[in-house]
Image (cartoon, rainbow, N blue to C red):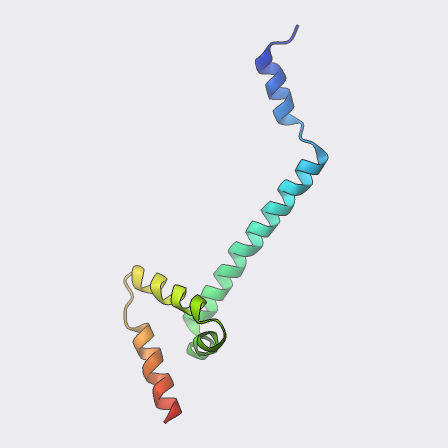
Length: 90
């Protein structure tokens, strides 16, 4: 007779094929989200023109960028952007 612990261990090792597919899909979606966020942040961090585009199309995302930069201790980027964009309009 098998002990309950060994039965649970065996059940944990064998996953239902549907559960495996769902798990892999969730994992792939999370990895895509992480890499997408990284590349979006990198692009915003290196291109003031891209930040201007983001301010027009997705201002809430740009606000998250500014807050994360300020939280890390880098201040003045928001002000530099606003000054440049104001001067480019005039």
